[in-house]
Length: 185
Image (cartoon, rainbow, N blue to C red; front, side, top):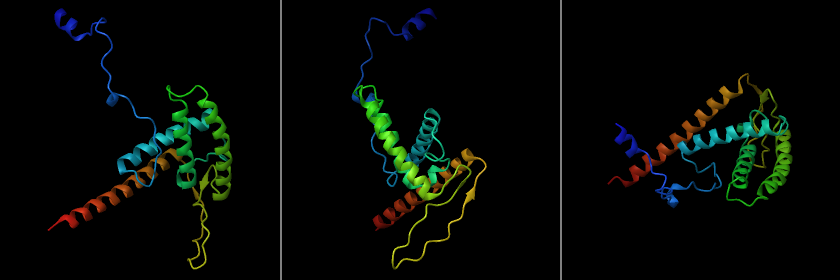
């Protein structure tokens, strides 16, 4: 038994284990929400939601900057996603020591844009509505906008993500089914 235990433990004189490029995590890449697979979409939603929650608590952001239902507004999703990736890059251990200052400078600009979009879409702390869309000449007029109230933001977010992932999976399944139909003799 003692011999087995000694065989399983690495020898401190063996040196560090060999590390290859495949063992290293990739640096963050921009997220194109339109091109994610269903699985990637779920992962990105969950990661972004965790980070946005951390961000709002750490910086004491009001609902006028990051409302609870930001995920319903593509303009906020794209902004917060870009800000998240910028933060990941700025705080990467291999990054220049001044990178976090650049992130904070860009964060100030992003907060102004977020305030604008929150005002424009009309979302609030306890209710939400779709962002108003202006109809261009020749288009049907935009539908009437109604506010929706929610009592449990976390439950609503989970239901939202499940619906988004299901919709993306259905689109993927349809794409592959059509691809298979095209290849049939």
